[in-house]
Structures are given as structure tokens and as C-alpha cells.
Length: 154
Length: 387
Image (tube, rainbow over all chains, first blue to last red; front, side, top):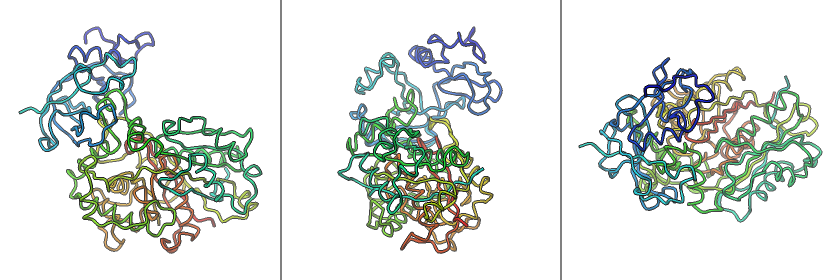
């Protein structure tokens, strides 16, 4: 993240090349980098990065690469998913707290019975074409964006 | 500042009907204006709460419903915050009347959820969640709330049976409400044995997909006198938006509801212990427990005791009666109209028109309407019997 700006961002810094925007965030994710915005005032980590911290309002937010490991904070199984995910039902979904403290929601590649709060998980980044969701789901600008999921760690 | 009053209310039946949205609205408006002058002689402006244009492929609901009410060239607009849309319409109407902008504003809500079947409703509701990471992970309304429920059961002593009892209580309350979608009681075993939707939530933990419309007329006290109706004062209003993504929030504390209700209490000069009846947003059983704690009725971890008589509740609980209408669970949940159905119940309780579900002497009511995942948007209103 060297050379990345630390906020407040100037207008010309907010382009699709920047991971402070969704295209930039997903470009990095496609290359295996999960980025958060870390608020340098209060320490909160925000996934995906955005120009201001929701917790304290500061715009002194800097990009920070996140670990790919974490634990399950809560989980469920979706029995009746939105139609593009019909082939994956029932699918396990969790809120994961990464080892950095950042949190994000994602599918878990394990059955509900095998998951519990506190279970260790590992992030995996997938090509959307491999996941089994209906490609009709993607908006035009989302077509190249990877999908993420979590594997249970043994 | 003017005070804002609910001068009259009306609602359509709730459930699966053969009426499109505009006709459901006509039913609600006809009831609200029964025996009164034409809406055109009374109403200065209209706000419409509507969740999604996916159901009927229709935006411009402000224009359409004003047209159907005979209100030509009046300000009329739709407001949207998923299931909090109805209470946002109410909030805007109250604001306009208090500010002296208008003397009488119609707040209404309408949703024709059954138009696209269960799949259509699932897809339309999923649009309320964060798109980039959460929608693209396949989340649904039940699954988002299940994440809260799982964590709540983990952190507190509450059990799935406790959540089931909330559904049982709300079904029982609905049997005394002629406006309710469901008129049958259920038992704990039925709730616990119902199909899994997003564990630990089961079918009977979830509010149903419903059609419905409701209309509430907000006016000055002088306009109430002209109409000759019985009114209820809107004494406090508070709204707050919290994060869209479930991952970014405290999973067992609905802070936005605490803030919104706090603002409503403060405006009205009351506290949680003063509230006699409350309609809180039980889209899923766990919400009733979380909200009872967030708005100050219950101590932390004891929210599931909404089902008990006041004398049987833990220390620190108030005597409030929660979801006397049957709540979203059993009265029904036509998304954009729900906040106004809550106002209809508050009005009926405070004017002594609640029939077999009347809480004797009810003087103060709290309405808590939420949109998106829990407190992604909260709109709270404090109602008081007119003096």
C-alpha cells in the first residue's frame, strides 16, 4: 500500500484505480489482496474501504491489507436464497471477524452442522464463473469482480 | 411550533388479496375519510411509503395515489427506507404540520408484495442489503436477521423456545384484531416444528409476505376541530440510520433504535416507563426482543419477556404491552405500509377503539418502525392521548 493516499482524499484521487472505490477494491481482491480502510484516528477497519470512518467520522483513513484468516462471529444457512443462488441452497453464510478485527459477511463452504461460533475460517477468492451463481445476477460493472467465500480451517 | 395530531386513520385488509396497490390505498383512504369531507377539501400534501417498484413495476407512487385521492397539483412524493418507509411518510407529515408548512398532510403506505410470489418478494427484499459484499454472497432478509438471532442466543440465556413464545403471543394478540392477517393461534411446538428458513429462524419466526395499505391524516389541532374527529397527539419523533452491512454492526445491540426512540422520548418529555403500549418492528421474533431492550423497556438479555404479564417480568422491566395488534408477525407486514399500520394501532389504543385488545387507560404509545437490517433505518414516534 506504499504510495497510497491517506485521507482526506482529493477529488482526483477517487477513481477506479483507487481501492477506496469498489472497482479498485475488487481489482486488488482478484489479485489476492483483501483491503480495508483503517481509520488512523480510532483504529476501526472498514471493508470495503471508503473515504470516511463510520465510527468516528474521520477522513484520515488509510488502506491496509487484511489477513485471510479469522473466526465465525455468527452464522446461518439460507434455505430460500435470491434466485441467482438457487443452485447453492441451502448455503451457509457467516459474519467473519478477521484476525485484524475487521469483519465481513460471506458464504462458508461447509454445511451448517459443521460450523459454530468461534470456528476458524480462511478466505478464498473465486472467479464468479466457478461459483455456480446465475451470471444474470451481475450488473455490467460487476462482471469481472471476484466472489469471496470462506473455508473452514481444520 | 404547531403540535401535530393524528386526526383519522384507515387501512385496507392485510394479506393475500386480489387488489393492486392503488386499490388497496383506495380502501384505506375510504375508511379514513368515512363521514368526513372529501380529501380534496382537507389534504394539502401527500407522502407515500413504498418499499419497492419491483412488485408492480410502478414508481411515481406519490403522483398516482394523490391522483386516486382526487388531490390535483398538490405536493406528493414517495419516501423509501425499505420497511421503515411508512414511518418516514409519517415523520415528514408531522414535520410539515409542526413547521406550519401545511395544515393537513396525508401519510400513507402501500405494498403489493404477493405480485411476484415468494421468489419475487425474496429478491425485492434482498435489495435492502449491502450490494458489493453481502447481496453478492446471497443473503436474504431472514438470513440477515438469523445472524442477529444466532448471536443473541449465544450471548444471552434466551432459547429458541423463548423466541417461539413471541410468535405465539403475537398470534394470540392478532385474534383480537379484526385488521390482522392471521386469526388463528399457534402453539410453541408448531413454531419450533415449522420449516427452517435461516436457522435458528423458522417459518413461524418470520413475518408473512402481505399486501396492504394504510393512511393516516396528520393535522393541526384547529384542523382536528374542523373535522370533529377524535385525535391523538404525535408528541415525539426520532429517526436514525445505522450501517447497511450486517458485518459492521454490533450483532446484539440495535443502537439506531436506541437513538431514534431516545429522540422521540426527549421531544415528548417522557421515558420508557411512561409507555403503556408499543408497536415494535417484529419482522422476525428476535427483533421484538432486541427492540424491547434498545428502547429501554427491558434490561439487557431479558427482551424475550415481552410475552409475560408485567407482574411476571424480571426486575428492570416496564409494564408496557408490546405488539397488541399482533405485530408484523400476525397482523401482517405489507412493507411500506407497516409503519402506518403501527400508527393505526396506536391511534385505536389511545382513543379506546381497540376492542377486545384494548389496554385499559392506555395514554402513551411508542411506535418503532425499522428498515433494512434491523436499525439500518429506525423511525420512532411517541403518541399521546389528546388532552
